[in-house]
Image 1 (cartoon, rainbow, N blue to C red):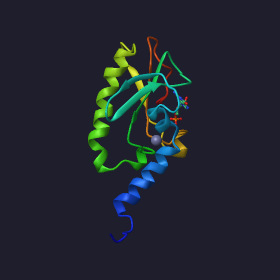
Image 2: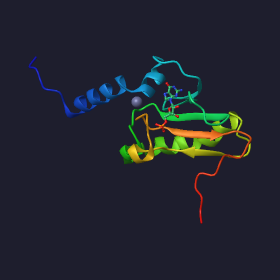
Image 3: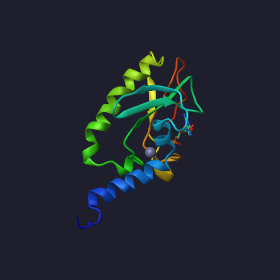
Length: 135
Ligand code: 5GP
Ligand code: ZN
């Protein structure tokens, strides 16, 4: 059998594997780093934030490593929709009975610290401090 070079698909897979090896949230998904998991299915994982800013503060992440919202592609459309649909359902099970706040920090300007796309879901019983003030 003659040896062939790697296909572009194989190169892309290697690149993806390398990113996942070094990513904190990929390690949490794999169970290499412990986390307080609140939900998991084939595509999505959710766990409590280690440093909560409110009584409810969890993170919803895709299992597929996407670094940030700036990196999403058309092929992620169903996954992103699925994540957004899950937000209110999980928020309710976590005790957000009257609303919550969602935040996606993106890149340097957005103050993103972990470069694996995540939706913060923040809430509780008390009204959260105003973040965007008009006028
Ligand atoms: P970012 O600033 O990137 O939007 O948010 C990253 C979030 O991840 C922060 O709220 C931070 O508290 C949380 N975080 C960082 N490291 C860990 C960890 O090891 N475990 C958990 N559960 N959350 C983490
Ligand atoms: Zn990752």
